[in-house]
Length: 466
View 1: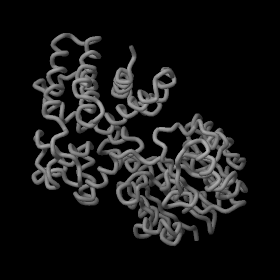
View 2 (view 1 turned 135 degrees about the vertical axis):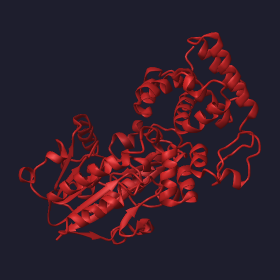
View 3 (view 1 turned 180 degrees about the horizontal axis):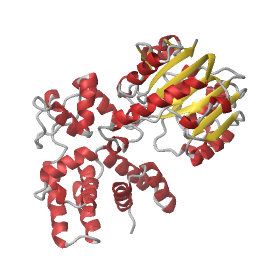
View 4 (view 1 turned 60 degrees about the vertical axis):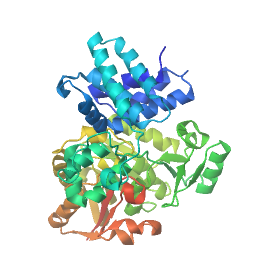
């Protein structure tokens, strides 16, 4: 019998071997096993995302308990141990003995007897130590994280980065980096927020309905939603685990999944009806569509990306929302020539980045990034931004945005453009942000944080050409 735990194990093993995105694998698996009950579908999703989110912490537990050298534990066994440990240490509704027995049964199909005994012994010891004893005090747990006295944690005083990395399940290099940039306490709060499930935020398509009309339509479908606390054009869906793509509101183009911080980037660009707008590195065109809506579907929005399939999705999505002014170019941004496509009133560069501001939604990102990625990407970002400036006509606007929180990719890139392009002058974000978002200004820039604003972590800067 195929169970949600068995399916979760195969998804996690696939992730370990080929590193695709977990949401695609989950969606494909659920489509193939459409007869799974709703609670089993929810459990599968919870286990997969939970294990990915807490992978570092789970591996630390495994290494603490194992009498076998960590590098001698095969990927298949480690994935199985992670899956069972997540249920034992993080889920209250699954009895420990059930998690242990399921792992042993899964192992029997592929592992020799001595490995099965190893799995059984390690998991029973984890269950004995448990995670349901009284949490230690604030000095032990830090930032409100659960820290149980039955485990020997890294010394927070001697090696705060190692302590924070284990406790919050993050790569040690990233813990060190964030402590250096924002301090230990703030880094702990940032990582804690990154381990929470992100709210389901949607942008309302005002070409077709008001926010109130959209909320009323969702209510009729049995979906609880409320206005965003930040933006007039956004809502937050409270009904848990509902596939919104099946709703009439989504099918009719009234809704688009998009975090408030991402929406703010287009608001900073502030496009007007009738203008020409260039969206560089547009991906699947979520911001392109928002820009077109802000322009009341009047003018021209050109999205550029190297990925043809993403551009196809962008056009389908625009069509769903009733948008007719977007067009796409499957080109390398650095190969674009202003002589060929002309100058634009507004140019947006939503740059390739480490994506560490969106870990709540994509927990696998933190395991796919490496210590040198930020520097490597910052070089590309500077090149892309400098090239993008060539397409801004006199008096026009250039906006740079990332969904990361690292200064090397954010402030440092913006400052580089300022020194290398004197024809551009930086405009103060606080004067451009919606009223309820002005507290998100950081110096002359826009910067959002998951732990401060309950949004994804974004950075944006805006210049005007003299």
